[in-house]
Image (tube, rainbow over all chains, first blue to last red; front, side, top):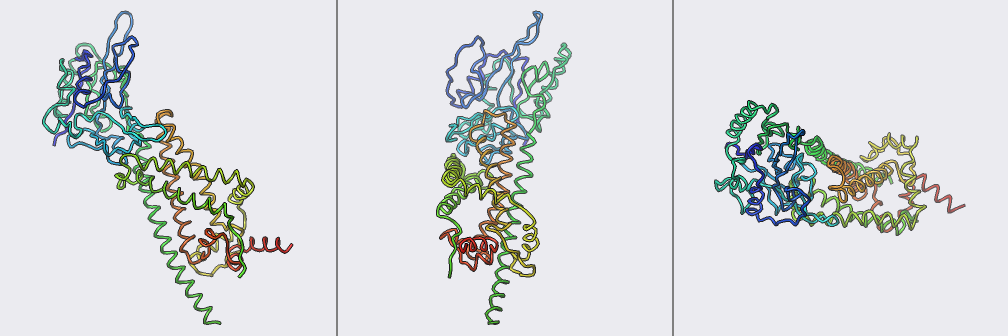
Length: 272
Length: 213
């Protein structure tokens, strides 16, 4: 099956935040009490209850101010560090390529939150007992709230009034995105680019940007942490090998020693 | 037959409490380590057991140290005292542990070289596991993610080293025919004079002379 994706065209976004509301509404997330600190940007950060949030940035000088909007949510990596380190299989790949999540399986360990290169998974765990769970965007593939398997676009895409968010086959969206980037370049945005096409195996949320990812507060070269690979693919298999060899060695050792010492005891008896 | 005290009551109580904690820690840790057992960690109950066991695992040796500071320091010193005598053990050990008597095992101290190796692992890996575990418990979100990632890595690495040696310790101490009185001594505290002479010659000479003198 062809992978699906969400395309976010930052140049078409007006930051109405309809996507934020639709996300909360569909996924039954609570509103968070916040304080106004002089910006329309709200709530202050992603959380257990806020899976999608628009970030506002003011860029430029000399009266040439640009107001840039960044969509902050799960990037749905093809090579997802969170899936790699999740011990219980609560995080898993949806057949369409999204990083889905079965909350009832979460142990609350939080490894995902510490290994995600985009700092997306959020915990509500108690610091002392460790009890709690993680939450994040599942691209509307959460069990019971699954729009994707029912042929619907994610709630954020459905509600977007300007066409900044589109949903479809990932290949087609890449073609659309590239064309749009070309157009932006012609218009003079020389740093325009399509973000997410190749990083971390290719993300399932693609960004059309009129400037470098870092200007939008996006990680330029997100990677699955080296530690994750060393830990999961080297140390753990080595651990199994060590345990197996030690167990087998001990079994052999005890058996041989038993035979030898019994033989010795028998000889001593006969000697007497 | 004459019996010699090898482990004080306090030492034995400490040992068995640490045994229970270690097993709980290892099992609940494996729920997260082995993805096949991951379903056992769902809901997070095993992570609470891990934390409670960890607190006892740290508290009991600390209490033992406060009650018996001199004995504890002696024990630590013993673990890190290595010399030429250990070479003799290393030469004899491979055949000796398989039940052969090709190379005679030289007389050993209160702890033989193998036991000292285990003591070193207990002390070093114990510290590494407690410190890294503490960071994982209290430092999540406070330390940079990169630090947390390496901490988990180190925690698992120390578990592999400590766990492998724990397997050796358990098997040698319980069912290995060479060490027929090891388990008995950790339960009742005493070994026969014959066993002490045979396995810990230097120690036996020292304490029997001490008694005589």
